[in-house]
Image (cartoon, rainbow, N blue to C red; front, side, top):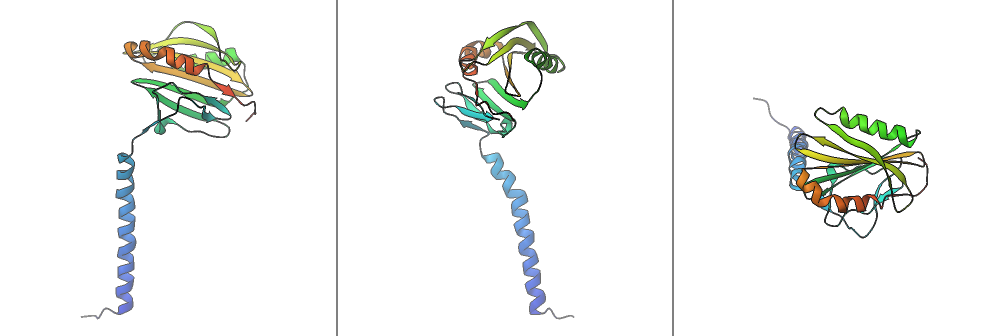
Length: 188
């Protein structure tokens, strides 16, 4: 029978330590991630940075869904929930005009199976002077609204969706929040 040297024993213990650490990371980190809530409260009295210099004041009582929120220097997304209603703002670089941005968003909505745009697009303005287009859409068991703005080389797309009853109750608060959209004027 071969004899195990002290050096071999230390190497074996070191390898077992590395394997145990790796197993702890593989099993432990996902468990910790699942234990943390995806939704975080946000303050409704200060602007939230969406990305690319765009800010919005969230509706009172809304939460931020960190799984769908990605702020950035040249683009960004913020996903809020107000009860069962989802309120998403996406900012991206864009070099087209407002009309084509509105058509592009409408096409993306109608390209989703079961989704239909309802009615014409109407002009919408923010308190900060952004001029945009807004409209509505339906989906199986859900209703929705959208708005799009073009400013400083950016497109700012707002989509709101929820069950009709929930949407009807929260839409005034979300529309008031959308009117607080601002851009700091810096191009991406």
